[in-house]
Length: 150
Image 1 (tube, helix red, strand yellow):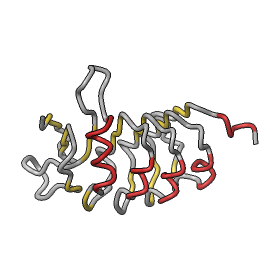
Image 2 (cartoon, helix red, strand yellow):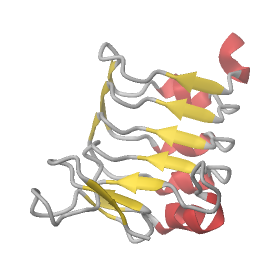
Image 3 (cartoon, rainbow, N blue to C red):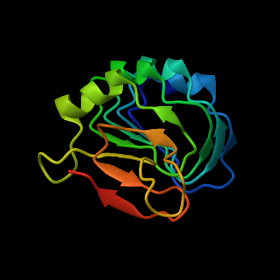
Image 4 (tube, rainbow, N blue to C red):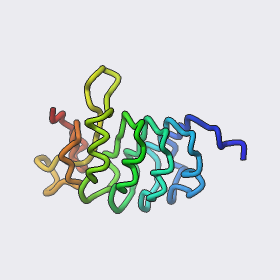
């Protein structure tokens, strides 16, 4: 419909946004920015996220997801900002996503990679939620303390 050309979807901090991410959202293939941070979303991140090939910014932090980060996210070749801290996403960050960091994950300050996840385990939590060898900033899910790794 009319939303097919939508480039920015900003639904930050709206506690009434809950449930799983609707499958129809993955049909918005022109999206460049998707901010679903600080809501009540749950469930897994669909492999259909790879349909959003023009995505430059993906902010999912502050939700209640389960499962792992799909390797299909690596098809989002324009991705420059990725925030998945405080989500419950676990496992290991796929190599396809790590390759994006070396290619173009940068912050507003030039040439600084910007990839934030719950990969810090040396604070209140016993183990990190997610193993991430390519994250720039690692957070502890319980304490919300984050540190830059590089």
